[in-house]
View 1 (tube, rainbow, N blue to C red):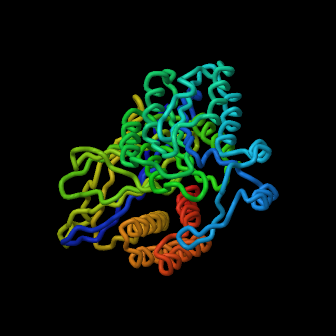
View 2 (tube, rainbow, N blue to C red; view 1 turned 180 degrees about the horizontal axis):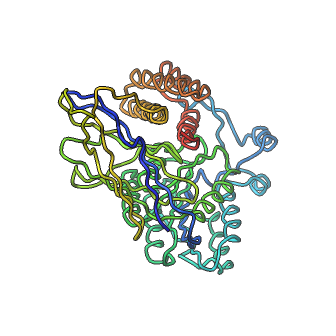
View 3 (cartoon, helix red, strand yellow; view 1 turned 90 degrees about the vertical axis):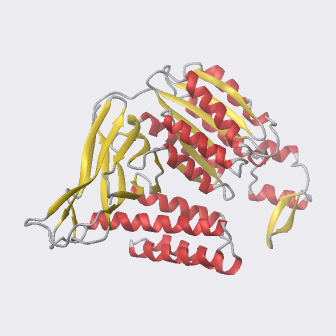
Length: 453
């Protein structure tokens, strides 16, 4: 396996200025088509809190519950919602699966696809965490199925501490992963967790150890900001499932993605000379997301990009602050290296430089650069809006969401622009986002990276 590193443009065209100026570079990373698929070592951490165990009734069953007085309409924050007012009758519970039932079914189908060289472990967590399946070979299907069958009957408390589950899952990967395997921690939840900062720190540790964390958010009331951040800092994938019957497809997609890995634990080191700074790094594809820089030396920063799939290049947008250049460059212009790039995966390494060319006739950026910068701006505006909501600045949040809508409209994404405007209107009238609508907007914006730039 060898890495392929390309930068665009070949030279960043800049006008000579006496002050620093912003410029952009697209970086594309891919792997050649050689090699064979590596085994997969999975640790799936499933939220087993009360909400995941509630039966999901159909319309007829719901009406029966209402007639029997088992459900009643109440006001929550001024919004009418239905809540269970007593135990669910056994006949309904037996025929109405819960989210954990769907999870168990999904895992049963995954077990059938595991090879002898694969490893699988299962952790359940709520107030406490418990390992149901320690790291086990894929050909020991009876042991795997027996552990999965325990998932639905667990009672681990009412609150949720995802960090405790992540610790157990990462421990299984640390001591039980197959040599040379693709290591992936899958986190499935439908709600909020205690100690979110602990989860983020664990995701960073996972990235440093070569483990990607993929997150599956279910329903309309989970911590989308946390789940997307866990995936982004570790180079994993973040998926949104509106309904529990989508769990099986989402889990299957994660296995397919792991099977398609060509280069594991990819990182990009960015070395900056004096006078140049890196303002921001954004992953443009395969999903649109902010990237976290790491490194104690501000001149040498590292991006943990996770695993690289065959035929699915990773494309990054680097926003650089180029140093000043005297207003009278020499004939033919002046060149200056803005940064040196080194991509690494195992023993494979490849390097390239990003160079600026200062001249009096600098052309504007190429359409691909402008398109990528527009996508990045729309995503960052949304994130700033949600940060403003968290700090209580609802007026500022609505303004930022409208700016994001304008960017999305300019990008030719009218449905996303309308969704952002709906969030802005909700912020104006209630001071809150719409919940599920906000989450659908967040994940749909991330999918902008699935389209070619």
